[in-house]
Amino acid sequence: MIQEPWDALKQGTPIPSGTSFVKLTVHLMLLKNLYVWCLCVFLMLGLPFLCLAQELEPRRWSHLPTGTNFVGGGYAYTQADIFFDPVLRTENVESEMHSWALKYIRTFELFQKSARIDFTQAYQEGRWTGLVDGVPSSIKRSGLSDSVLRFAINLYGAPPLEGKEFAAYRAKVDVETIVGTALVVKLPTGDYMDDKLINLGTNRFTFRPQLGVVHNRGKWSIELTGAVWLYTDNNDFFNGNRLKQDPYYTIQTHLVYTFSPGLWAAASAGYGYGGESTISGEKKNDRRENLAWAFSFGFPITRQLGVKVIYLATRSQESIGQDTDSIGVGFAIFW
Figure 1 (tube, rainbow, N blue to C red):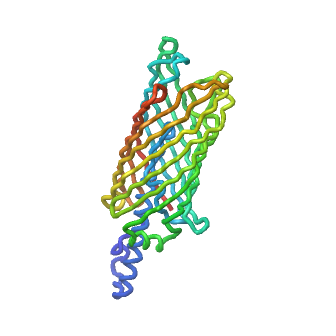
Figure 2: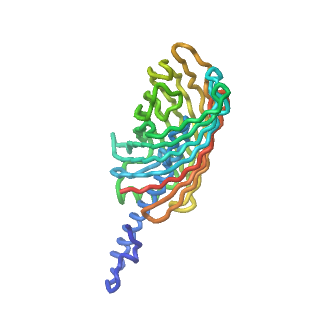
Figure 3: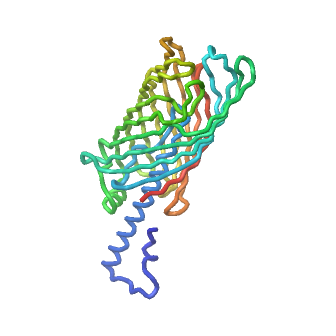
C-alpha cells in the first residue's frame, strides 16, 4: 500500500529540510498517481461479455506502464430473446446466462512501442427455453467457454514508460491521441457437443484484427475501434454438418468522463454487420445486423481495489439473431 506523504513520517521522526521534503513529496505523489491511474485504466478495460457476438469494451487502447501485471475478475448476468432459422422449427426461445470470468494482462515494450498481451477465461451456466416443433422444451449448459487471447501494440502515442517516468508523463499530458492495432484469437477450448445445437464453445478458431484510435482531452476521452471477425470452419457442426461463416464487421465508439482519479462514467455504442453462414454447402440467408449500447461506471474502494458496473444491450436488426440485456460487475488489482 502506498502511503500519503504525511503518513510516511512516523511520530518522533524529524521533518526533512525543505529540498528533501519536496523531493519526497513529489516522489510519493507520482507513485500515488501511477497507482490510481493504473487501477482506473484497468477497470475501464472492462470485463468482456463472452457470451455475446459483439462486446463493447471502452479504453482498450489506454496507456499502461510497461512491465506491469494486471488481474481482474467479474460476473455478468444476461437475458436474451433468440431468433433461429425457421427451418430449425424452434420458436419463442429465451435464455438466461451467468458468466464468471478472469482476465490477465501483461504489459511490455516491443519495437520501442508499448504493447500488451491479454488472456481471458470464463465459466458459464445457461438455461434455454422455447418451443421445438410446438412442444415446450428447455435445456441447461454449464462449463468453460472458449479462451480468448489478445495481443495489442500502440502505433502512435503512449510511449513505453515505467514507474516514476510513466507517472510524470501522465501528470503533464492533458491532450493526446493514441493509435493502436491488435489481434484477438478465440480458441476452441470451450465445452462443445457435436450432437447439440446450443453449446458454450464454438469448436473453431476466430481471428479478430482490430484498429483503434482514442483522443484524450482533459477529463474527456473518445474512442473509435473497427474490427473484422474471421471464422475457421466447424467440421463437426450439429448433426454431422459443416459450418462456414462469412466475416462479421464491427465498429464501436466510447465516450468517457473522469470525475476524479478512479471515478468515471462511460457511454458506448456499436454496430455489427455480416456473418452469413453456410451449412454443408447451403447458404442460410442468416446475415447478422446488430446494434449495441452500454453504460458503465467505475469507482475505487481502496487503493488496492476498484469496482466497475455495466449495463449492456444488443438488438438484432434481422429476423435471425438475438436481443440481449446484460448487467455485470468487475474488480481489478495490479502489481
